[in-house]
Length: 538
Image 1 (tube, rainbow, N blue to C red):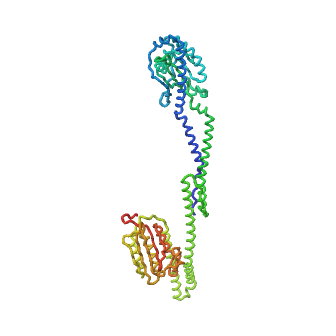
Image 2: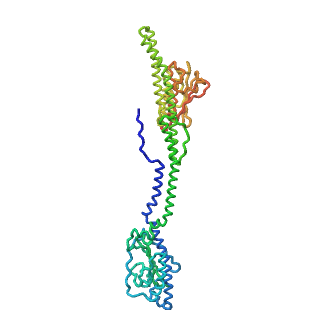
Image 3: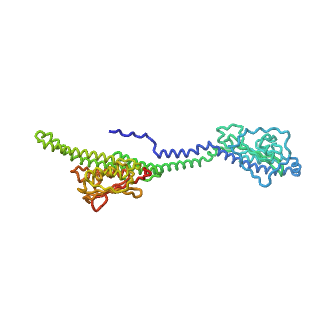
């Protein structure tokens, strides 16, 4: 008694695996968002763009205020300033900062006391602009400073009036006529409490400096700075939308997992139930398995269904075969047992002739059992699947060898065919098939019958015909000649397995063996793949 196969380890169901995979795929972009600085760079460029727009408006306002205060002094004041050429026409200023390439500079240096104070015109224009900057800061949250042509602050939201910002490279660049943008670290450390403030979330600030031009002269500079929004702030501001999106994605992931589990695991579960029923010995009717969403599941269902049908056919065959074998063995065993019992009980009172008769009968039964066992072994070997195609049998040579014993027993056999025709079959298998057909003709054709074997190649196959001019096969028996244990010569030792063995050998080699209708006698046709003489494996 064999032990039951071990139960597989407990594993998650496919729908659970699919759900976990979908959740992992969902979490990858959310978890990787903080690792990438791409979005943070976009926030920095957004802040830079806003500061550039604000600085351009403030520069235009300061220019108008400066010209209004200068009045008639404007030409003389401008003449005292250096010439800074600029491009004609439109001069758009685009965001250029990128955290991936631009370094975060140290905090800006403190403003210093200048060697001289700002001019009257610049101070007056700055005084007019200071209330505007203060009101604007309440909305934009940006620190704003306006300097004169020498870098001295004339308007500020931080109370730095009269101090010089010339040591700051952004201001120096703007006074030289070149706009400048920088990212600088904040002086104060960012605390947990600060993270809730829109102006204190990031650890750095964006600085933008624009020159204030009048013709080809620079009359001042505008410096704006602001802390950009952080990723955490952006997510916090969109928390409701992100929560709704997350719930929607979770729902979609669950639906996808359920749909995939329904279309994949349900057919697999049905096939598994069918396989367990077959393993338990139940007869399972062939039924259409629900189609799944993947090819592998369908292929598995088809393979398991085919295997179940094959096992059922094999079980039916084994049952029928066992019944036929028991019937064939029962008759000689019963006769053998009766003879032995008679000899045991009456051997002393029997004559020598009677004992000889019973012993001869017992020996005949033993020989029949021996023939049955031998034929059953031959049938078992013939029905075992094996690779074919590499073997090669020359029909003329094998036919001559197979015909020799029957010709010696008195059967006239004529061979008709070309010498080089070969079959893709083992010579032993072809010899067994032809020997069975010749012996069948010798036993059934009748006295004086003649047998003829002819072969010819047609395309990629060879057709071998074995016919005789004997009594032939009746219409009632023609459909049963290949059945196992069917024979009309049981009294003379026939087992009814010869033609069944011959057909199994032919089919194992990829061929066929059939009974062909003829007007006289009987004819068997063997068709098998041809073997190419130049390539024996073909």
